[in-house]
Length: 244
Image 1 (cartoon, rainbow, N blue to C red):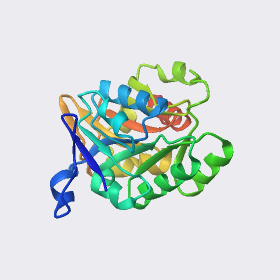
Image 2: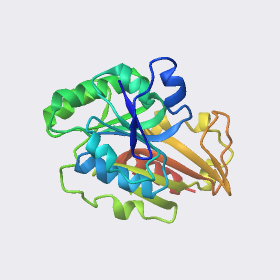
Image 3: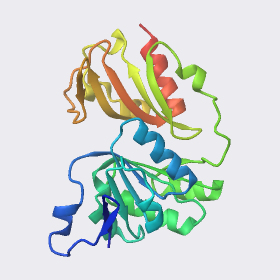
């Protein structure tokens, strides 16, 4: 069972209609599971960037000490797929599983999140063997215990990059201003996920921010798209975007 945090008080949901009353229903930008050093750092940076978060941990003390601006915080046994469903993890665009040392817990939690249909699941691994298993079950893998390199920072800082947040050494969230190359193309036609293995989180058209992105949405020059993915794929898309 999941326990929801409201104003730092723990409330045990009633069984009847629990999910209807308590779980977040609208799309949430990111889910973060596990509040170790990596998880806390990720939550802090995403919250500072103004992203809506769902944070889950099985440790009540860690949940209690989260900043007030974390709107959804849940104490739950992540081995229990029903508890994750009650928490609303299936409503997230991207979920990062930050459980490290307990490999069994990491793998089972990741499998549960994938089974709930989350579009993008990124999981922390502490060894190549651990990472291989996570990859096999369908997650994207990061190794955050490695030195956080700046390998791609310089290549990302071009005139078309508006902003970026480094999730790990290998994965980033990037705001990219589109060149004329992609003007007039639809989201479906551009097919970023298939061609570049990137997920589009948001499209910004002037002052309009679009989070519910329809396949027939037409893109124009100077639109800003927010994508998440592997840095190599971001760099590949950026090179294509730079070709006028």
